[in-house]
Length: 389
Image (tube, rainbow, N blue to C red; front, side, top):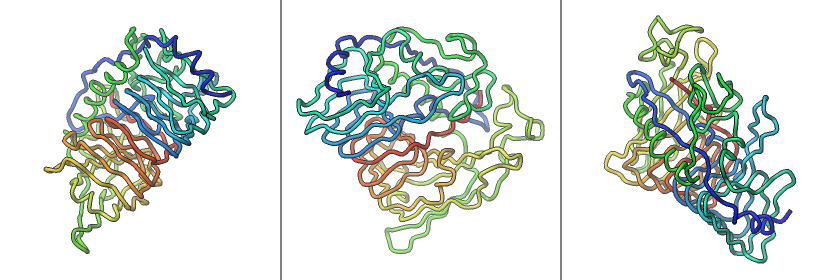
């Protein structure tokens, strides 16, 4: 099925989508929460524009602004289907603004194409882009998007769940609007994505940034200004981490009023300048599972320390690979530009205030940023959400 013909018949119907992301009051002490909700299914999520060419995103992308594609490009879909809803369509491309695909477009799209209110589509006449069987193109109207992703949640928030995310979606109530579910109202798709960035993600960012590191960072200079960075988790177990006292530190401990009792999270601080000059970042003395057999998380907070940009180029991150679906790199809001090149990013990049330029490499995870521009390839490694309701 050729995409041009399908798009031309669909774009006129683009209207409002049902999605509203309310801000929640989260208790901030020794604990925090990490969840990118349903957006973990994508390789790239942008508040503004997404620009790419001559590459592919195996798990697709979501653009809160416009999508500019050129020449050969292939879009896949995340293999995330809840066992109780195998018939829900997988999303390959979600575009709030216009979709512009020029310069001899070619490739395939394996997954639903969702367009927002007022989307305009420009696809070169010589297009050879194919929409694979089982995929569809539709405008997000009413509860269409909600229906498409249910029973996954827009933001992954719930009342009685330990962990909502990849392969672990067990909502307490399957009725939209019921307790534990995010409410929806008629607002445009673009506004919904922007609200997700401005309210929900800003809350998560604040919680992470207020939580002190529990691991140590060592920077060694060997050929100035080049450095090697070592992140040492000190082999901490869950019960040795701040806030996990005896009352909730057990295999069954931890309740909704005692967040964090079932979580072991290694936190590290790295300065932007050191990271930009690094040839390798090594993770050491961390456990993939805690003393009770539960998976652990790794958070690397990249501090601006007077810098407004970061380069992660020709950088070795191999030691993060075994736990990349439980790893998140959180960038200081003062960092407005991130350049990626010649690197395999292991984990999710969380930089909602940064424009990302990414070429010659791939990401095993998700890039959440202000905008994206480049040829970097995306591989499916959705971040497993960590919830402290």
